[in-house]
Image (cartoon, rainbow, N blue to C red):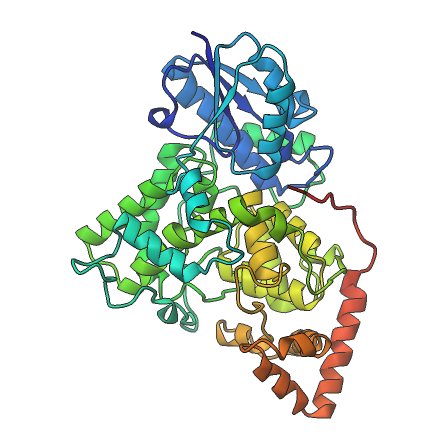
Length: 508
């Protein structure tokens, strides 16, 4: 029996995780993942394209071919539409693909398979890249309009019996040690070093491939450090567990304008393409704790991200993604200038983060949420523009990641299906979590922050967690208010534009 299996750039799973009985594997540079899609064009960071190209070719040569599969590698230039691949399934008795966890790609595959003659039914298998199966996600999130993260996280911990004591209570007496994850780095701190994995034939070929086909895409392609094989990804994980894990928790939210990722794991580029899987990571984390106990704020904090937030985001995407991504309750309509890609906005912490993401494609979650997302939110940037920026600049960005994180969390665009208030702040938060000095950028940031509150004070006054800020605004010194307002207005006029881009709306 001839059996075909489709593999996309984010599905590079080990042989033992692949379905049995496969004869042919199609490895596909789908246009959605290489930015060449006609309806949803995206200029991905050069290092993201390099990561996909290098890891896919390496996976083909080092994993699939030695296992005896007939492999057909499909380059993005040979595909016009995602559904084109279905035509290649003619003559096969069976065809499988792991759940792509991508609304657009899944719809296209299903539509093409339904209308194409003489092709087998395309079986959608549960992906090994999450703890929960698709039906479990549907069962938990159901049809309610809101699901709180805290409840989901507790349910996950109990379901998988992770950090649960003999009395079915959380180890350490509480479910979350988030309050212990907010230390600023010591002054004159020397960040930990990390190993580079970017020097091999696959990366060099990918660099030339990207230079030839995507010369104008954002990002630098010079210092590529990412794992492109299972072995390298596992070595990266081990290095994190031995070198950075203990300090991860206390400094999880710390901001450093120059250190690539401080004590963060930076595992998501490998995890989100299948070179690692979440069960493997959590098993390694728990084994490390058994061998040499890890501070609970680090152990729980990391597990909260992988077992909790990552699974929660996938759940929200699967069950509410279409509604979340089409929200814009604050009617933000401004667009980004090139300054937001080049690191020339004049907001020093923001520009430092932009330069970091240019260099590697990676910034950690606080830099994403409280620097980039925060600045875009108070600058009234269209949520679609924010989504585009993160998809283009982040090496680990995929639709399932960015729809909930951008529209639902960072930009509060759907009005609160995930959060009880917008994640926004003035300059004080940045100063508190970093060693930046108070300077002119603070007036601009504060003007944007308080200007947003001024504009939306009627609705914010009805939010129990925001009404105190409306009261503070009313008592603000008028001269101070005028100064920061003028500087924010200048910033809006110089660093944002009103001309809208075309954004295709996804419907159910």
